Image (cartoon, rainbow, N blue to C red):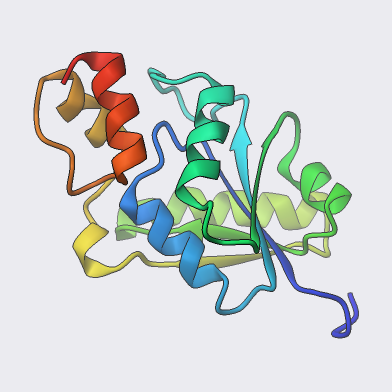
Length: 166
């Protein structure tokens, strides 16, 4: 990787839905990367009860980052390292909310390096206001009729309300 080339980072996840915490990590990634690809996984790495289709999530994320020309959104299948290599990305960005996230994320980072030694993982912690926030919690609160307006952008909130009747 030459320094004269733009720095491309991949931010993978299920983003079901994208939260303010995800947004915070993505926007701060642009401080160190020239371009960010938010990569929506077709297959979750952990068992999750989904709410939105991959296509709906991609569309939502594009709406959220409509004001950020350096953020792209794509769905992907298969190995993350293969997707990153095909997009010229040498960095994977992962958000760490708590120490409990670290063990799993560290293991994934090490495995990715074993699969492709040119990939690096950058761990970012979200703003303290979002350190407790997860898409799973947002989904559950919305399903139970709670107010999630502080945790997601207005476009995501509208989709959540339409989906769960919150």
